[in-house]
Image 1 (cartoon, rainbow, N blue to C red):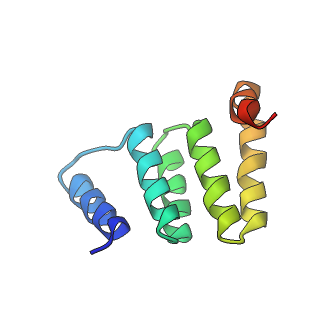
Image 2 (tube, one colour; image 1 turned 30 degrees about the vertical axis):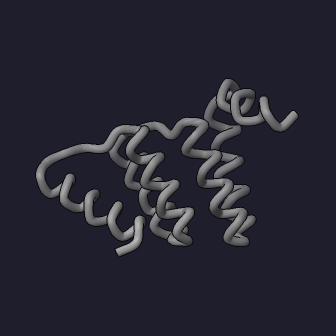
Length: 100
């Protein structure tokens, strides 16, 4: 069982037992799925996160931008960049501090 499969299994068990995810857990899972090449699963988690009322942070957006770009999904990466820029100017500055 790969790390992404293990993460998915743990997530399923957690949710079945009435547990919940916070931003750190979502970010960790999005990263794990993205690094495993399961980009659709990472995007699905993002949608689940926002639907549950948890607002993405700069880590969420940077992770999604990175994994989509590396997978050759530049249009989707741009979509997340635009979402981040539209969400909050403070997030913009934090995300780009190291790049300038």
